Image (cartoon, rainbow, N blue to C red; front, top):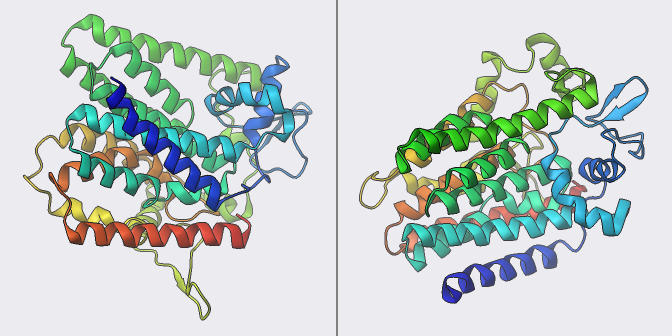
Length: 383
């Protein structure tokens, strides 16, 4: 047991040291979840101390609210209880991200994946993906993405082990009560629970935990907006970058699919004349530029055996977001990919076989370099 946790512990320490060392300060401009946690500590759901210049806020009867689900704020409660408004939301996010990478390694170990491929995949998660720039930004939207990565790593760890329905249910609730984009994955997880424990009571236990999460969320909405089914997002005053698209097409529409596909697979960085010679678009950037290791998925060692559970989780989460009105804003890379990136890297660990090849390490090095440039731009542009 001690040996099985030594590797994740060392991974946690190493990743956190790099994150903190490269980013001594995170962006303190938008930390909605700190103010949400302050409200919870005062037994209220509005945000009376929120700075007046924040956007993505809702005004109802003279009170201000954030539209976001509550889990990221709940996780901040112990820290906010100690440090109050001075809490560094981004720094806590870096701790969670390092914990997610460690849990990811532990999950791959549980799956029986060897040392070389699991360290390779963990490095791709920590430094070869947009998780690293997201932790360097640390604003509310990116902090929530980090919490989702932690929840997905927890799901991986449990699915790779005994697959306890209550634990899978709790991890699922943590994920979708952080970002509602994870809700479509719940039926897939229910199928995985049934596959592991083909008994009605097992699926019922998983469903009960999620039903409890739904009840909490509906009550939270009622307390905020006076109606359980009011999620808050339709009440937002949209920023200029998204206002026209939302006014014309709403939150979800087929019209937005090409823009997401372009951001995910095509959009390139801007060439500039000064180092580092590449400048990212705030609308996002194609995965092949930020994480070129994904090219390895097209020629896996040993075929595609064992891929369907992880592929189903990816598709159930990624496809609905293609219809969403925004691809994200002020970000390095396509940050919505973090909703399902843990599952992509499980496939990567399977794809590289027992030992990654020289070409695999080259792709990984390119990804690390790209995201190091991303962290540079995060600090340079004040994101």
